[in-house]
Image (cartoon, rainbow, N blue to C red):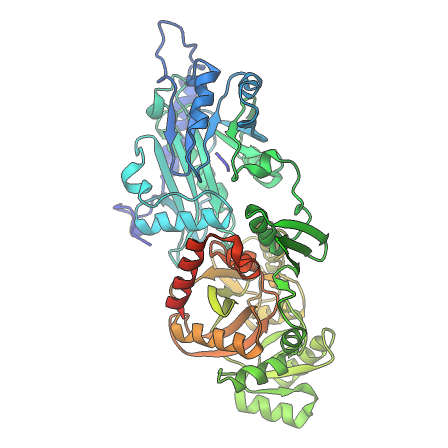
Length: 610
């Protein structure tokens, strides 16, 4: 329910499970013509489900309430939940009676149950574009699933579970894989109730549907749900159930579109730290943005007092023992005014890090005059125009090659800052390094916004649709602006914004890779080259700033070549999950809030990274 690249040995190219649509449609019609029997009344002459049945799913157990004869046994089963797991009791009969038996231990999950009747399900006539759906087949698939789970705040699964502990007859995993890169874009898990516990109703259920928040292809979630529905329909299941949070309007709209209908079944969970937000009432951080919220949640988990001082601005105060620190997202009182002023002016930042031996691109001021600008453009061929002060990619134009474009970009940049810079254009990938306490915590490649053509919609419409997806995935923090820079990038590729992009064609619509302008972010922490790590730490020390995002332009995160771009004194820590950015941030502020053994492990790991 809700909450590369080894491929299947298939005769199809690349091992894809294409799933013959005609075959599925034929099976569904046959099932409908046979008029599947209604759920069986478990009388003495009817088959019975296994009693008191629970299924280990790695992240926790599914406890099938309809197989329990008395609430006491069900309560005892829920109380046996393992640490850091999330057990779910579903199809609970008389949940009010169950809760009255152990109100201190369990709670009624605020989710709705939806059901898809597979006899009347209609397969889509459209095939996924830019990706395909297949079964889980490899260790790298399992690692990608855990990465997506972590990015969505879901409980991860021990890797060995996928291969040695999973009941393969009962549990099925599907993944969506990018056609070009082989990246895993999403995942879903299904449970066959008949194979699991001899369910006389021959039901099935959908769990852990999760799409990578950085996925840019539309329809990944829908394709995964459809593939699972068709899989269970082919196996003779009568329905597919799922549970979804009552306020998840976007997911509910998708399920209703596919034909799911709400049914009156209830779910009960145990009270634990993972579930706390579901039963403890509104959070103090409910009005904070994702960048402040991730820190506040980690602080509360450790018992650190949180006082939100200005939710709209992302301000909060953390207090523990005799120490109290005021924060604005990842910016704290530990960052000096001098360090702030260095980061505030990109020209000043460049001088400081260059003096420390960090490689920086050549730069001039837009106030140096037309001759200097023309000479600079002739020398480098392409340039970047940026405000000397500003954030979130506002006013930046990249890859300009004509005097006219440079002049227009300077005027746009002046709307953000009076001082404007021209910088040597360095081709490559945008790498963000999160350095906390002068140690690397996370590294990620940031990619500019793309759209994928469908042969029907104009580029403008594709951008608006992609913006809605990015906003939904980032809590409203990411969207592609339809401004002069976007239009210039599109024209440079040979299109106009009202043109229809051919089906399957990718079009880059921004040059900058900022998250706030629709860019996506892809973790490379475990593979980043030591030279790049050293440059990031050296830049942080030159500025003397304890928490900073260092931006480098690199040929590859696995190669040593780079050029320093800028430093961000208030980096978005929420963009780098599952790396422990919030944990290391709180460690910096309150080092005694973590156990001594953890402090030593973090120190040893940091020493190894340099």
